[in-house]
Image (cartoon, rainbow over all chains, first blue to last red; front, top):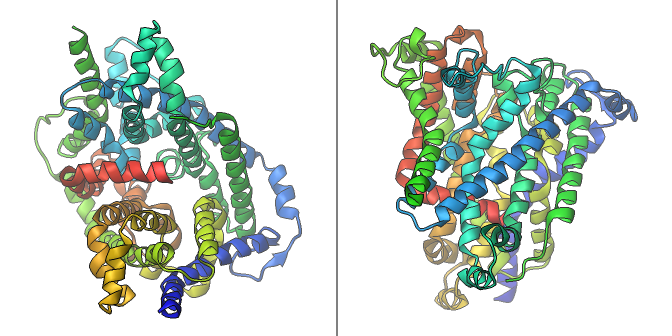
Length: 287
Length: 269
């Protein structure tokens, strides 16, 4: 019986082990080979030592992509946390139609990024919907996607609109887990609304805040279809994202070795950023 | 007064998230010159945008491709991941903890690292421009395994022991006894896998160049940036609408499951 179960257990796992070896272990190992080679996939691979890394530290487009990602994250993360917390707080009060509102805010989350991008391209157009609203309000037009200064912030705004529904739901779940006695006790001690928020709500929502941070960071470094469809990385490379740059090096210029090197370095940066975020933001929650 | 304000803000929020979609659908029925207007009602209804999409790109074929790929991936993820989740939670074998550690590790690997080498693998297998490239790399999901393992741990051991004494094999136990009890986990993994596969666009752009095999988001994205849409707004929005409708329909019927699944994925991942 025992032996049979042991064999079955192993047998059940063989599909995963094969899949892991082919689609995870091999690519990981092969990426270590690629970063030391120059290769256009057609002609034989050529060993170049550390040339790819040397190229990378002198590549202004690599740093441009890093800068663009930082701009994206600097706007996207605070905006996302603020908007999600705001609506989650509102939904957490005693209201009717909570289900409807929650479902409405969630719609952009389920819709494909391609749809959202095509839609927002029209909203952001020079004579598009948003500028029409702005002119109606007596304000000037904004060059949403045509100015290098505005393009990345515009994409960050759109990404927030697309994703925030998910974080509203997560924050709402977090808020509903906070025992009301904590607030009652604080009220007895004369705590203000802000104090209650600052010293009870925010610390107890720490796990969700960390999650939003980490997921948004990974999202920022994975940005692809939005600049690909909306701007092609322009104007003046102001929306060139990490993945779009890898894609261009690999499939416009067929530099597989250099594209793999970019992927390798971006992956290390993601690891480092996420580790730092956990180190400095994550707190133990005692409840 | 406070309550009125509260509802006003909530409603304004709903409008911000929903109105663009309403506008998009309305715009696809407007004559091209009226597309940028704010309103929803066209001066004259026209299906010209949709006709152009249907003539210019293989949108129906790409819908069927996407459906086939997403269903294949989802079915195989449910099958394999639940099998492995069952082994990890209910069967003892040597190397089990190591394997679980490996699975947790793979969940943390950024795809940027494996993207190019996996493409090279597709070239070596001669899978470029085949369904295999779209389906096989996604047949097992580490996250799915993780979720099934957690869920299966809550199923009473007595049920499994009783079935074993009755002479049931482990596969029969998994599919006849454990699966019916694990509906929430199946729904969660099913929805997440299907959505991820349906919405994926970077990978199809890399491995599929043959128009007949392209997935729906891929075809729509390429239409939006290519000359074939002639920079007309109506047809681009019509293509986007066709891409959105299947998911929106599914969401309308199963919204509670969508929301719970995706929120759960975030919280556990």
